[in-house]
Length: 555
Ligand code: PEP
Ligand code: MG
Figure 1: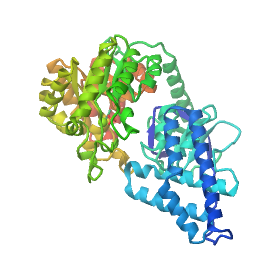
Figure 2: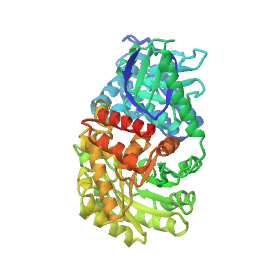
Figure 3: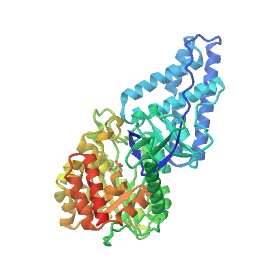
Figure 4: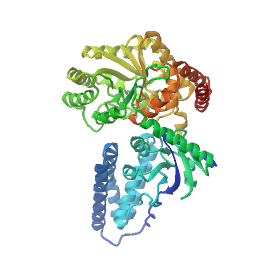
């Protein structure tokens, strides 16, 4: 057997034969067109229009995040700047085919150079170029393989148009050589619960038909597996299915210690699924969805309607809403300065809200109005807090609007290191492990090339979480976790051992975490956490926690 590694998305494990996605269409030659430029341009416009409409209709069929992604891709196809670039080449006498491929490639290089979020959109642009080229040639765009049996899909990267409509009965797992944790393959795989590993540098060596095991939890693709390994993987998959089918009980440890399991939601539309999966409330409601596609902030009335819809889904339950978190990975033209050299370290989160305080006041007004007509237990928290002064500011302004429970997210090492003083000034803390990891490890969360540093398992990150947990225990204030870390079943136990009082995650992770918690007492969790904390690196911490957990399970 051999092992390839990458970034696992979700916790699934699957096994099956590899089927690779077809190679890109052959590149057109740089030849002069026999047609007049206007005729070539008309061919190009017709092709782009067909591609954009096709992407939109796939989006409409898929719904959800996939629809947003595909609509964005359709807009990309019809980008006027890109069209100008294609026209320029056609005017120089070249065919529409060559002009499209060359102009799109130039644009792609710009995106790749920009890196980060934009860099990860480069693959989307390549896909659009392939689709337009196929349309111009009157052939089918390269799409999913059709081996006639279930398969492990292997590709350089997946086009959103393909990921959106994957047949989950046929695609056992997805392995890509490109793409980081925020690529569209990753986002859509996470949403659809597809077992996936992205950024597997050796994926190109996987051969059609060979059997592999894909373990997203460990981020490994095992080639030439032994019978024992295949059986072990099958047992793991069965255990996951059993956890998913288990009754929806409240989150608790083996000794009965309650650990409420809450949902991370990005829009009210996800509430029903969260409830169905047993979410005991909402631990992080990201409000950016209301703002991201707008040129101006939404009105108080629009916001109130959305918040009311959310709160109505959780009567009597805790719902933690985060004030708008604009900047860095979530830039907003009307709030952020696009000229900042380091937006992750710039005017973002609470800093951006203070700089445009009316936006915060409108949001709190809308939340208070929604709170008044519903009976959920509404908590409101600030993103990206770094100081005690910001904590005092936010807590005061939330109370001023008649909202009773204010808190802060702990996403900066600064806030974690003085968590006792921060918590003394507010009612609760919620640790955002995605950003806390990014800032502790100085590793951009959007950058695939530093993905190995972005592990919340790193003892430096765990140690900061531990100090927040201790401060919470001392002051009897709740400390939730709402970053991706809470969705890892073993890490969830560690987090509780470090003092987390509730865990919030994507609804798809609730069953695995619920099952994992029931295996350990609070004392076990503390011992497992201590083992992880004492390690020297993230891999060591995970291994130490696993060894300690196995010992607890045997005793
Ligand atoms: C986090 O940073 O962990 C978090 C939950 O916030 P977001 O991922 O929205 O930045
Ligand atoms: Mg964050």
